[in-house]
Every structure is written in C-alpha cells, then in structure tokens.
Length: 398
Ligand SMILES: Cc1ncc(COP(=O)(O)O)c(C=O)c1O
Image (tube, rainbow, N blue to C red; front, side):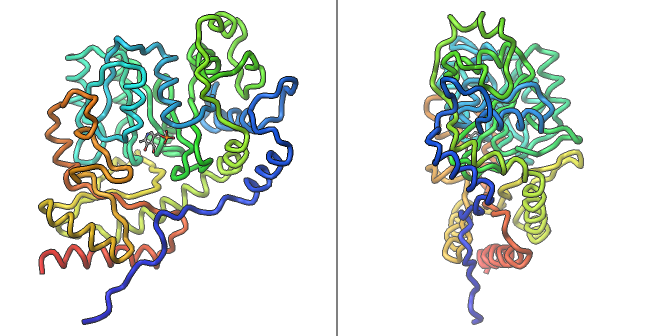
C-alpha cells in the first residue's frame, strides 16, 4: 500500500504580523502609553487613528473601538436602544459570543432558520418578524456567508426592525460591491487573532448614527476624554447623554490598535490571498459525491478565513472522517458533534435559550465541517489538503 501523505503545516498557525505592526508596538511599549487616552494628549494615538481609518475604509461616519467583537455587539445593541424587555431575532448559525451578547443585555432571543447555503432564510425571517415583532435583527455573517443584503435590509426597514450586522468574519466582504457592516444601523467587527485583522483581542462598532455613536463612546468608558476619539460625535449629544450613560469600561488598548492599523492598510491584499486559497480548495473538492459546498450569489464577494462543506453521510461516518483527517494533519471542526469542541457550539448547546425547533438548520449543521485556511497556503498545500480529505471520504465506502 502506498504511504499515506500527511499535511504538516499547522492550520491554526497565523501569519506573522507585518513589520509596521512590530515597529508600532515597540513605539507604544517604549512610550509606556498603553491606555488609549492621555490626560493632556489630544491626537496621534493608535486607537483614534484606527477608528478614523476604519470608518474611512467603510465610508461611514463613525468607528468606535472596543475590547472585543462580542463587546462591540453588546454595545451596539444597547446603544441602538435594545434593552432587557425586548425580543431580538438572531440567525441560528452563529458562534456562542453572539447569543452571549444578547443574554448579556437580557433580551429574549428568537432564532431564525438558515438555508443549506448557510445564509439566513428570508421566508423564516419574515415569519419570525410577524410572529415576534422584534426590536432588532442581529444578523451574524457566521464563517463569512451571506445572501442578498438589500432584501434583508428592506425587510427590516419595512417592519421597523433595527438591523445590526455581526461582521466578525466579513471584514472586507461585499454584497454587490458594497461592504458588509454598512447595511444596518451598525456593523460589529472582531479583531481577535483568527480574524482578518489580528490584534489578539478587540472589536469595532461601525455606524452613521450620531446617537448610537455618542452613547457607544460614553459607554465604552471614555472618561470625558471623547475629544481624543478618531470620529467624534456632536458635542451636544455627548453632553446630553453623559449623565445617564454608564461607563462599562470596554475600551481597546493602544498596543492592540498599534498592531491592527497596518493590517487594515494591507486588508485588500490579504483578502485577495484568502480568496485564492478558498477558490483552490473549493475547486479541489467540487464534484465529490458525498460532499456539498455552499453556493453563493454572484453578487457575493467573500473575505474567507475558512471554508465549510456539508458531508452527506451518517454521523458515525462523519466522526470517523474527522478523526482520520486529524491523524493526517487536517484539523476539521464539525458542527454536528454532540458536545461543542473549540468554536463549534451551536444553538442546542445554549441552554439559556428556550429550545426552538429548527429542522432545516439542524439538518445542515449535522453534516457541516469547517477548515481554517491560513492565507499563506500555496496551491500545492491546497491540493494536498483536498487529496487527503477526498481519500478519507472514499475510505468510508471501502
Ligand atoms: C461569528 C462571530 N461573531 C462574533 C464573535 C465575537 O468576537 P470576539 O471573540 O472578538 O468577542 C466571534 C468570535 O470568534 C464570531 O465567530
């Protein structure tokens, strides 16, 4: 029997930070100024610069940096006016920090089915809006998948439902040429290590709304130093909200912003590398009989840091497939596992939500596998990854 090949590059390895990030970090460390605000300083800080650059990249008025992606979602919802008595809709394919943000506020959560292409089911969204009259729809672009954003935005507008986008996996992705995060009242981004921009931890709220921005600046914990922000909401609004908005201390620190800023400058180029890796794996797996890749509208431009596919096999076979791939260095995550393992928890694991019957979502998640894609993979690496996965699928039938 020929020797079975093994994939030797750790798929969880992230790319080294660019030299400019290292230089910025050294400057911050040498200065000792790791806090985003200075008592007398008025400009030049990295968090403020990141806010200005982030807002400009998206063509939006405000970007407010905070401590995490989950923090960005919580603050955006609160500052948009969502509170504990409200109902919020959430698409059912998402990650634990997203319903966690809603639980943090204390609102009740109603889930919306996803389609077999991992995007929100618009018919179910419409019927959930009718049934629950929600205050907001939190649309999580989980693993970077999304559908017709115009239709989603129109539906929400028609029913007076606030649309908040979770863009943790879609920084630089576009629907019909328009960047994600710009379709609702706010877009929320993560700067956690495995995202398009790696600051270790961090989050950004993007909005055009003066009121939301003023509240978010205050709530993030600005200590009356909001004039040091990159995008400063109107002073009369800051003064108006200041006495009633609590300080939740959810700031981003200078070091994280210092390493993030140069990565925003390189974003388009890095996303192009990620798209090439995604396309190579997608074409390598295309046509494999027991495997289905999600399809996307031609208006979708992904910003993929991972790839997903659905295995049409019984659970035991999928378990074997995942275990055998792991032995050969191909670390897959499986959303159908009975208990969550590293970033794969799904709605049935969140016991703080009333159980909801989501047959279509469950069907899709039961076979859903996920492969992280370092942007540095070569075409040869991609070929080997596909070869190993295809061999292990074929072995199930042998
Ligand atoms: C889809 C999604 N949304 C939100 C978040 C929250 O981001 P953070 O880890 O920065 O809180 C994550 C984290 O991985 C995520 O995967």
